[in-house]
Image (cartoon, rainbow, N blue to C red; front, side, top):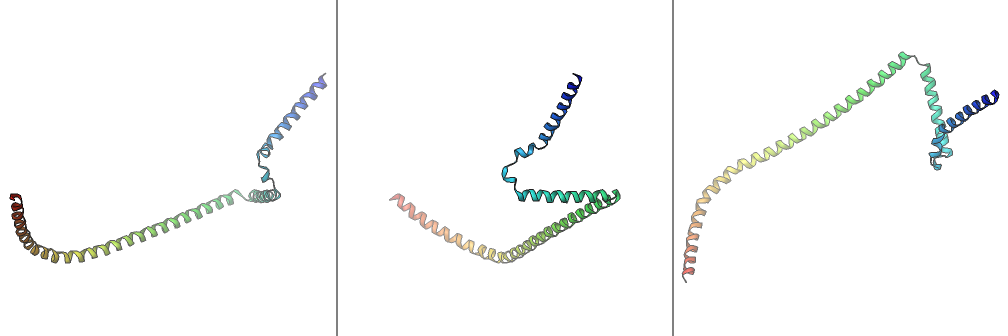
Length: 152
């Protein structure tokens, strides 16, 4: 009886191993069948070989070399970031310079208009009294005409 119980315990561990193995491959059940192609398999195998080669190279490297490589990569990233910032700043300065040039051009154009404006304003001032007197005489004539019409 004791032997039978031991065999059942072994059966339970075998069942748990099988159920664990099934759980390891459950993702395959959820995969679309169209993804299980020979090309996809070959691509996965290439990726596997690449990762195995990277792992072997990392295992051969000393920690100090890994550290130095990481620092070099960080430095390259910072250099790239600085380069992009300088380029953005240069572009922004070019836009500002262009806007200033446009504003200066508008100011010069406005100054020319302002220089010609006093001459025009003097002409309009001189013409204004003449127009006022004409409009008064017209108004008086029209007023008289209106008054006559009202009385009639």
